[in-house]
Image (cartoon, rainbow, N blue to C red; front, side, top):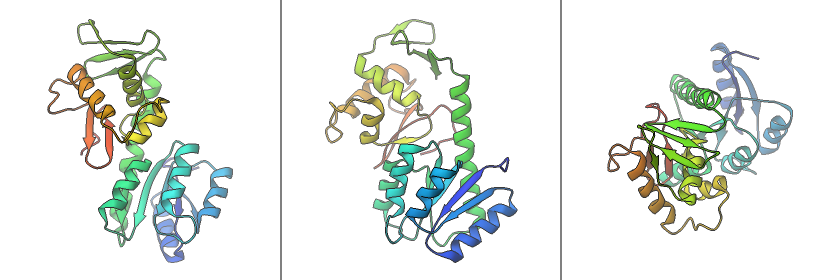
Length: 240
């Protein structure tokens, strides 16, 4: 397997698939292609890859459906390829868990740059996860203890935190640098008692920001992605 990574390209247009494959293979990636949802699901079953390029508008199962399926089965990067410039498509894609999107027609150099950025972000997140002890997660000036269910500040003092705030913060800390919609936060926190359509999550995030941010009015750790959700930033690699 290429040291740069294995990329899955899913598009119903043969010319686009072949062009992307030829270009990325010249850059040193391993590339596997699928013409539709059925081919892609078979690829997922038999192969491991690092990132999927998914065409949003395909006959049969579209890219949005495949992204939902992928998020349930694999921890990989997702970039949408779309001919649509509609904001709603971008928002839905981010809510599902896409890392990025690029509109057709696109420059192959821009596509390559976006692929590198997503892979770099994923590798950084995994590295931080591996470096984190099983019990403690560090971010900003704080330390979250998973075993003791405590949050400590820069001087080691314990910061009062409710059980729901802890569940929410743990979910963010274990999914850094990834846009999470309110609905996705409920799934990851395993707490369906919350209603994604009310403002309960927003209220809890506001309270958390007061406890962990240097300036809650200008958050640097829990950032808002307008129309899509929130992202827990462990570094400066994710810009809103």
